[in-house]
Image 1 (cartoon, rainbow, N blue to C red):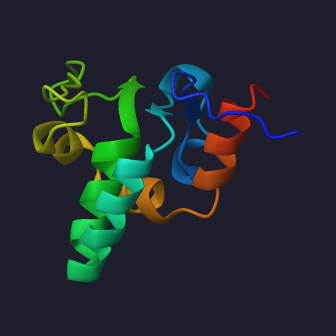
Image 2 (cartoon, helix red, strand yellow; image 1 turned 120 degrees about the vertical axis):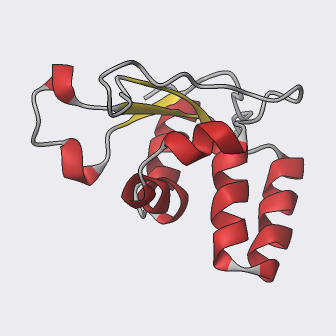
Length: 119
């Protein structure tokens, strides 16, 4: 029996570079499954370039974060546009190495699938 995708369930993801840190020091990224339209938009963006694909992937899957701090120690604010997608401003606050892992990482799809299935 097929199980419907749960678009409201978020995956909690800590990047590989922060997993050794105590939990209170880790940045937790909140990720959501892509919609069909989001998947199409990401595919089209990847045809333009891997950079455009990365930004599109993050716009459609990044749903927030916990414990992402600015250089001055203030919490970084996550913002969405009217469609509920991550803004370029928000994506720009994510360190480049984290953006790469969140968009291209081999563990992301598994994290989203486990969140979707409620595991």
